Length: 173
Image (cartoon, rainbow, N blue to C red; front, side):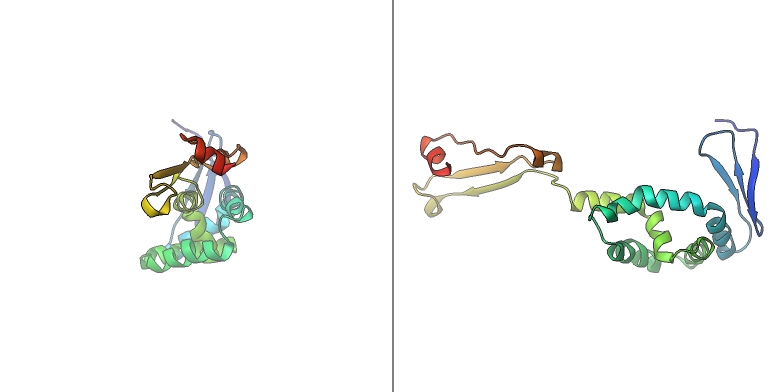
């Protein structure tokens, strides 16, 4: 992609945001300390950040996959505390510029890993299996059961029991 035209949209302190000829592609020119560049980013990109947060993070909260408090703790505070000093300064600047908490900024930054974590945490990511044998069964034979629960999509379908013996079918009915 080649873009030859940058159109200045806004400026804050020494930071600038430019629009390109490409849809949804912006260029930010930031200058100063890590905190100052973060603050410039927060002011200049706040509307874009809010739109992303509402599209990516808020549905996870609204759908009950995570509470805002847990998201802020797991993917905000914990990640922020592990960052280098300059990254902490940058994220604090973004938060101050956008008028957000630093936790909200870091959660948005970590929304990809958070979505993967929540997807695995709240998914039926495999089949449930159960087995029993010996004294635990009526005739000592081994019984194996498996549930096809790869995805929440399966919740909309009929649950069935499949058996290879007539006695099992009668017992389950």
